[in-house]
View (tube, helix red, strand yellow):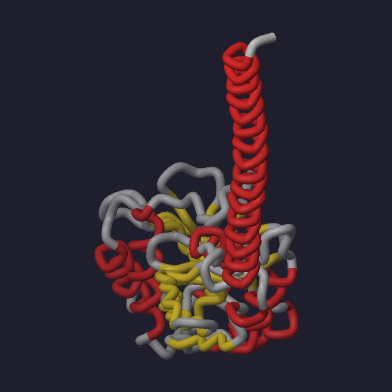
Length: 289
Protein backbone atom coordinates (compact mmCIF):
# COMPACT_ATOMS: atom_id res chain seq x y z
CA UNK A 1 0.00 0.00 0.00
CA UNK A 2 1.47 3.29 -1.04
CA UNK A 3 1.42 6.38 1.10
CA UNK A 4 -1.34 8.10 -0.84
CA UNK A 5 -3.65 5.09 -0.54
CA UNK A 6 -3.03 4.87 3.23
CA UNK A 7 -3.88 8.51 3.88
CA UNK A 8 -6.87 8.36 1.62
CA UNK A 9 -8.19 5.31 3.44
CA UNK A 10 -7.51 6.87 6.81
CA UNK A 11 -9.39 10.03 5.89
CA UNK A 12 -12.36 7.95 4.83
CA UNK A 13 -12.46 6.06 8.17
CA UNK A 14 -11.93 9.20 10.20
CA UNK A 15 -14.75 10.96 8.35
CA UNK A 16 -17.08 7.98 8.76
CA UNK A 17 -16.22 7.64 12.43
CA UNK A 18 -16.88 11.33 13.10
CA UNK A 19 -20.17 11.17 11.24
CA UNK A 20 -21.38 8.08 13.12
CA UNK A 21 -20.30 9.54 16.43
CA UNK A 22 -22.11 12.81 15.72
CA UNK A 23 -25.29 10.94 14.75
CA UNK A 24 -25.23 8.93 17.97
CA UNK A 25 -24.69 12.10 20.00
CA UNK A 26 -27.46 13.89 18.13
CA UNK A 27 -29.88 11.03 18.78
CA UNK A 28 -28.97 11.04 22.47
CA UNK A 29 -29.59 14.81 22.69
CA UNK A 30 -32.94 14.46 20.87
CA UNK A 31 -34.01 11.63 23.18
CA UNK A 32 -33.09 13.53 26.32
CA UNK A 33 -34.83 16.66 25.04
CA UNK A 34 -38.03 14.78 24.18
CA UNK A 35 -37.92 12.94 27.52
CA UNK A 36 -37.59 16.20 29.47
CA UNK A 37 -40.27 17.89 27.36
CA UNK A 38 -42.65 14.95 27.94
CA UNK A 39 -42.28 15.19 31.70
CA UNK A 40 -42.51 18.97 31.71
CA UNK A 41 -45.79 18.88 29.77
CA UNK A 42 -47.29 16.19 31.99
CA UNK A 43 -46.22 17.90 35.20
CA UNK A 44 -47.84 21.09 33.88
CA UNK A 45 -51.02 19.23 33.05
CA UNK A 46 -51.03 17.50 36.43
CA UNK A 47 -50.52 20.80 38.21
CA UNK A 48 -53.35 22.45 36.27
CA UNK A 49 -55.63 19.46 36.98
CA UNK A 50 -54.88 19.65 40.70
CA UNK A 51 -55.62 23.37 40.72
CA UNK A 52 -58.93 22.82 38.90
CA UNK A 53 -59.95 20.05 41.33
CA UNK A 54 -59.02 22.20 44.31
CA UNK A 55 -60.93 25.15 42.85
CA UNK A 56 -64.07 23.03 42.27
CA UNK A 57 -63.83 21.56 45.77
CA UNK A 58 -63.38 25.00 47.31
CA UNK A 59 -66.37 26.47 45.45
CA UNK A 60 -68.86 23.62 45.82
CA UNK A 61 -67.81 21.39 48.72
CA UNK A 62 -65.93 23.51 51.24
CA UNK A 63 -67.63 24.91 54.36
CA UNK A 64 -66.74 28.45 53.34
CA UNK A 65 -69.70 28.74 50.92
CA UNK A 66 -72.29 26.85 53.00
CA UNK A 67 -75.40 29.00 53.67
CA UNK A 68 -75.50 29.41 57.44
CA UNK A 69 -77.41 32.66 57.94
CA UNK A 70 -81.14 32.44 57.07
CA UNK A 71 -83.42 35.44 57.58
CA UNK A 72 -87.21 35.32 57.06
CA UNK A 73 -89.25 38.50 56.67
CA UNK A 74 -92.87 39.43 55.90
CA UNK A 75 -94.68 36.81 57.99
CA UNK A 76 -97.71 37.73 60.08
CA UNK A 77 -99.42 34.51 61.18
CA UNK A 78 -96.69 31.95 60.56
CA UNK A 79 -93.65 31.76 62.84
CA UNK A 80 -90.36 32.51 61.07
CA UNK A 81 -88.80 29.70 63.12
CA UNK A 82 -91.05 27.20 61.31
CA UNK A 83 -89.76 28.37 57.93
CA UNK A 84 -86.13 28.27 59.07
CA UNK A 85 -86.54 24.71 60.36
CA UNK A 86 -88.14 23.66 57.08
CA UNK A 87 -85.29 25.23 55.06
CA UNK A 88 -82.67 23.53 57.24
CA UNK A 89 -84.40 20.16 56.79
CA UNK A 90 -84.37 20.74 53.04
CA UNK A 91 -80.63 21.49 53.15
CA UNK A 92 -79.97 18.33 55.18
CA UNK A 93 -81.41 16.18 52.37
CA UNK A 94 -78.35 16.94 50.23
CA UNK A 95 -77.10 14.20 47.94
CA UNK A 96 -73.70 14.22 46.26
CA UNK A 97 -73.96 17.95 45.59
CA UNK A 98 -74.83 19.98 48.70
CA UNK A 99 -78.10 21.92 48.53
CA UNK A 100 -76.89 24.52 51.01
CA UNK A 101 -73.97 25.60 48.84
CA UNK A 102 -74.13 29.28 47.84
CA UNK A 103 -73.55 28.52 44.14
CA UNK A 104 -75.63 25.32 43.91
CA UNK A 105 -78.63 26.75 45.77
CA UNK A 106 -81.87 26.20 43.79
CA UNK A 107 -84.69 28.71 44.30
CA UNK A 108 -87.08 26.53 42.32
CA UNK A 109 -86.52 23.40 44.43
CA UNK A 110 -86.75 25.23 47.75
CA UNK A 111 -89.96 26.97 46.62
CA UNK A 112 -91.43 23.58 45.73
CA UNK A 113 -90.52 22.36 49.22
CA UNK A 114 -92.21 25.35 50.88
CA UNK A 115 -95.31 24.95 48.72
CA UNK A 116 -95.70 21.36 49.87
CA UNK A 117 -96.32 22.67 53.41
CA UNK A 118 -97.67 26.21 52.93
CA UNK A 119 -99.54 28.27 50.38
CA UNK A 120 -98.00 31.72 50.30
CA UNK A 121 -99.02 34.51 47.97
CA UNK A 122 -95.40 35.35 47.14
CA UNK A 123 -91.94 34.04 48.06
CA UNK A 124 -88.68 35.77 47.14
CA UNK A 125 -85.12 34.56 47.74
CA UNK A 126 -82.07 36.79 47.89
CA UNK A 127 -78.51 35.55 48.43
CA UNK A 128 -75.69 37.60 49.88
CA UNK A 129 -72.12 36.45 49.30
CA UNK A 130 -70.76 34.19 50.67
CA UNK A 131 -73.30 32.37 52.94
CA UNK A 132 -76.39 34.46 53.68
CA UNK A 133 -79.97 33.83 52.48
CA UNK A 134 -82.89 36.24 52.86
CA UNK A 135 -86.45 34.93 52.35
CA UNK A 136 -89.30 37.40 51.91
CA UNK A 137 -92.78 35.86 52.23
CA UNK A 138 -96.16 37.40 51.62
CA UNK A 139 -98.96 35.40 53.20
CA UNK A 140 -102.35 34.91 51.64
CA UNK A 141 -105.27 36.61 53.36
CA UNK A 142 -108.04 34.43 54.71
CA UNK A 143 -111.42 34.68 52.96
CA UNK A 144 -113.37 31.80 54.49
CA UNK A 145 -113.08 28.47 56.31
CA UNK A 146 -113.83 25.30 54.38
CA UNK A 147 -114.77 22.01 56.04
CA UNK A 148 -114.45 18.66 54.28
CA UNK A 149 -114.09 15.16 55.77
CA UNK A 150 -114.05 16.54 59.32
CA UNK A 151 -111.03 18.76 58.49
CA UNK A 152 -111.12 22.56 58.52
CA UNK A 153 -109.03 24.72 56.18
CA UNK A 154 -108.30 28.42 55.88
CA UNK A 155 -108.89 29.48 52.25
CA UNK A 156 -107.92 32.73 50.51
CA UNK A 157 -109.85 34.93 48.02
CA UNK A 158 -108.61 32.88 45.05
CA UNK A 159 -109.78 29.59 46.64
CA UNK A 160 -106.22 28.51 47.50
CA UNK A 161 -105.94 26.55 50.74
CA UNK A 162 -103.66 28.54 53.01
CA UNK A 163 -103.38 26.06 55.86
CA UNK A 164 -105.11 23.28 57.72
CA UNK A 165 -106.58 24.31 61.06
CA UNK A 166 -105.10 22.50 64.03
CA UNK A 167 -107.82 20.52 65.88
CA UNK A 168 -106.69 22.18 69.10
CA UNK A 169 -107.62 25.56 67.63
CA UNK A 170 -111.08 24.64 66.39
CA UNK A 171 -112.70 26.57 69.21
CA UNK A 172 -111.03 29.74 67.94
CA UNK A 173 -112.94 29.63 64.64
CA UNK A 174 -116.14 30.31 66.53
CA UNK A 175 -115.14 33.97 66.70
CA UNK A 176 -117.06 34.41 63.42
CA UNK A 177 -114.35 36.39 61.66
CA UNK A 178 -114.79 34.24 58.56
CA UNK A 179 -117.74 32.32 57.09
CA UNK A 180 -117.56 28.56 57.61
CA UNK A 181 -118.57 26.53 54.55
CA UNK A 182 -119.45 22.85 54.95
CA UNK A 183 -119.09 20.55 51.96
CA UNK A 184 -121.95 18.03 52.00
CA UNK A 185 -122.04 17.25 48.29
CA UNK A 186 -120.63 13.76 48.79
CA UNK A 187 -117.57 14.46 46.62
CA UNK A 188 -114.28 16.20 47.34
CA UNK A 189 -113.98 19.84 46.35
CA UNK A 190 -110.23 20.02 47.07
CA UNK A 191 -107.84 19.60 44.14
CA UNK A 192 -104.83 17.25 44.25
CA UNK A 193 -102.38 19.85 42.93
CA UNK A 194 -99.26 20.93 44.79
CA UNK A 195 -100.99 24.24 45.54
CA UNK A 196 -104.34 22.87 46.66
CA UNK A 197 -107.50 24.78 45.82
CA UNK A 198 -111.16 24.52 46.70
CA UNK A 199 -113.03 23.78 43.50
CA UNK A 200 -115.94 26.10 44.23
CA UNK A 201 -117.52 28.58 41.84
CA UNK A 202 -116.99 32.24 42.76
CA UNK A 203 -120.76 32.80 42.62
CA UNK A 204 -120.98 30.74 45.81
CA UNK A 205 -118.14 32.64 47.47
CA UNK A 206 -119.57 36.05 46.61
CA UNK A 207 -123.13 35.38 47.79
CA UNK A 208 -121.96 33.54 50.92
CA UNK A 209 -119.57 36.37 51.83
CA UNK A 210 -122.31 38.96 51.30
CA UNK A 211 -124.73 36.95 53.44
CA UNK A 212 -122.09 36.58 56.16
CA UNK A 213 -121.58 40.36 56.37
CA UNK A 214 -125.33 41.04 56.49
CA UNK A 215 -125.93 38.62 59.37
CA UNK A 216 -122.82 39.73 61.24
CA UNK A 217 -124.32 43.24 61.40
CA UNK A 218 -127.60 41.91 62.78
CA UNK A 219 -127.42 40.97 66.46
CA UNK A 220 -130.71 39.04 66.38
CA UNK A 221 -129.24 36.04 64.59
CA UNK A 222 -126.08 33.98 64.78
CA UNK A 223 -125.08 32.08 61.66
CA UNK A 224 -123.61 28.72 62.54
CA UNK A 225 -122.41 27.67 59.07
CA UNK A 226 -123.05 27.73 55.32
CA UNK A 227 -123.85 24.36 53.73
CA UNK A 228 -123.26 23.31 50.13
CA UNK A 229 -125.14 20.25 48.92
CA UNK A 230 -125.95 18.64 45.56
CA UNK A 231 -128.56 21.18 44.51
CA UNK A 232 -127.26 23.31 41.65
CA UNK A 233 -126.63 27.02 42.34
CA UNK A 234 -128.00 26.71 45.88
CA UNK A 235 -126.69 26.71 49.43
CA UNK A 236 -128.12 26.77 52.94
CA UNK A 237 -127.53 29.13 55.85
CA UNK A 238 -127.80 27.36 59.20
CA UNK A 239 -129.01 29.81 61.85
CA UNK A 240 -128.16 28.77 65.38
CA UNK A 241 -131.27 27.37 67.15
CA UNK A 242 -133.35 28.42 64.14
CA UNK A 243 -134.37 27.31 60.63
CA UNK A 244 -132.13 26.89 57.60
CA UNK A 245 -132.36 29.47 54.80
CA UNK A 246 -132.11 28.41 51.15
CA UNK A 247 -130.44 30.96 48.84
CA UNK A 248 -129.68 31.13 45.13
CA UNK A 249 -126.11 31.98 44.11
CA UNK A 250 -127.29 33.62 40.88
CA UNK A 251 -129.03 36.43 42.74
CA UNK A 252 -127.63 38.96 45.19
CA UNK A 253 -127.83 37.98 48.83
CA UNK A 254 -129.11 41.41 49.84
CA UNK A 255 -132.15 41.06 47.56
CA UNK A 256 -133.02 37.59 48.84
CA UNK A 257 -132.46 38.41 52.49
CA UNK A 258 -134.52 41.58 52.26
CA UNK A 259 -137.56 39.30 51.72
CA UNK A 260 -136.54 37.31 54.76
CA UNK A 261 -136.24 40.34 57.05
CA UNK A 262 -139.52 41.76 55.72
CA UNK A 263 -141.35 38.51 56.51
CA UNK A 264 -140.15 38.60 60.11
CA UNK A 265 -142.48 41.50 60.82
CA UNK A 266 -145.37 39.60 59.27
CA UNK A 267 -146.44 35.98 59.13
CA UNK A 268 -143.07 34.51 60.26
CA UNK A 269 -142.91 36.65 63.35
CA UNK A 270 -144.49 34.22 65.82
CA UNK A 271 -143.34 30.82 64.61
CA UNK A 272 -139.90 31.67 63.17
CA UNK A 273 -137.81 29.70 65.69
CA UNK A 274 -139.91 26.58 65.27
CA UNK A 275 -139.53 26.38 61.47
CA UNK A 276 -137.33 23.82 59.71
CA UNK A 277 -136.45 25.86 56.65
CA UNK A 278 -137.23 29.05 54.70
CA UNK A 279 -136.71 29.03 50.92
CA UNK A 280 -135.80 32.41 49.39
CA UNK A 281 -134.68 31.21 45.94
CA UNK A 282 -137.77 31.87 43.84
CA UNK A 283 -138.32 35.51 42.98
CA UNK A 284 -140.58 37.39 45.41
CA UNK A 285 -142.03 34.22 46.88
CA UNK A 286 -141.09 32.65 50.22
CA UNK A 287 -141.63 29.01 51.01
CA UNK A 288 -141.26 27.67 54.55
CA UNK A 289 -142.14 24.77 56.77
